[in-house]
Length: 232
Image 1 (cartoon, one colour):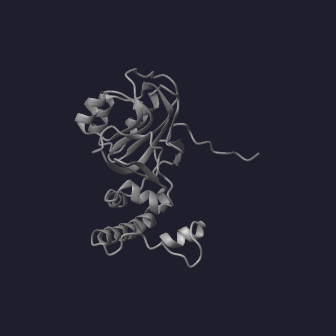
Image 2 (cartoon, rainbow, N blue to C red):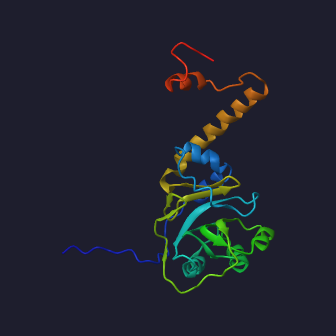
Image 3 (cartoon, one colour):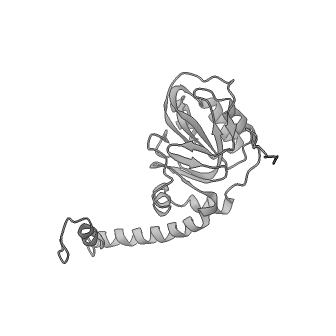
């Protein structure tokens, strides 16, 4: 009988997106990265920053919890390295907060770059005053339990997107985008091209050189809105 190695529920070590790539990614909006990644990787809009000024980039440290229990978030924080982004599959539960001011203060002291939670948090004003990038699905004053096991550093599903340990995570006022670790270098090259293209497009609009996109007539013909040879 072939023996199969079973990954433990709590995984301490994993390969992270390189810091040099994280630093480059931090220069781009989450929307640019989502576009060049094929318009995928953007988390559901229900997961948003507590304040629009909050932004971050870093490798994912993934956590799966049972609804309303934050035991495994504490475990993840115990092994987090500076620059990590703690990404929590909280099952979208908003019945109690999974984090608040105290844990946010701890994250700052540890050098954690941000927290992304598909669930609720609390102490809104204190976290905003602290300036710690906290992205969550909602707020609730109820506190969590701390006694139900979960998993750390396994692939998770959050906001309709699969996130694996070490994937690049970027967040800003528009939301959160996740890029698979192996694809980060190529995605960043595409992001440079996308920014250059959009910068030129905006310049042409402002100068009135091009007030509509060059692809519009072709797309309307393909959709059957106008006929072949016809133009707006």
